[in-house]
Length: 261
Image 1 (cartoon, rainbow, N blue to C red):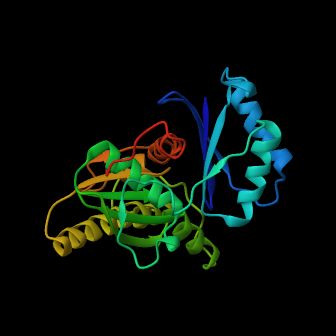
Image 2 (cartoon, helix red, strand yellow):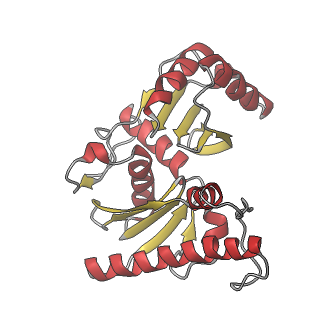
């Protein structure tokens, strides 16, 4: 079985694949203060509670946008699962032509998502990831990664609104009943939820105008199930896209799969 780990600024998402099937997945808050042993206890306990023994984990692949935490997770895998993980870099076989001034600047999570979406759909794509940042990545049907957009994430915006104002509260990130809020909490929810759906729709429209053709728009990330139904342009939700991309890249990197030309 394969352990796939996506280290984000807000959450660590990980899952276990049996062949190509995602058996179980989990989300943890990213915590820079945790040691490799502390992370190992949590990972091992959750995996074993799902009926999978530690010994069944024969390989691990990690994508990280938090460089200081990468060695901690690497050490955790070596100690608790007894092998060295693969760490995704811009040199991996994504099956894409990276038309980016400096590919090393692209977050590996964005490249993993793009690789997974292109392998699945083989068409012109915009991949929207609702994470700590809201990102849009553009991929052509012939596998060219054109680049995209990075905006503050919904939770980042909510936290900034709360921390930089004297009276505005932190609110649940949920869709309000109406656009016009009847109290402060629902007014903030409206601005966040409908505002970010509108942001995505406007960016998708402008990207399609710029490239000159329509695209399939796919959403992933923790808030995708809430925001995608509000959006007019998002056509499909793939909540496990990053983990599926990691499983795909592991097969390619270890010679178990042939990357597309």
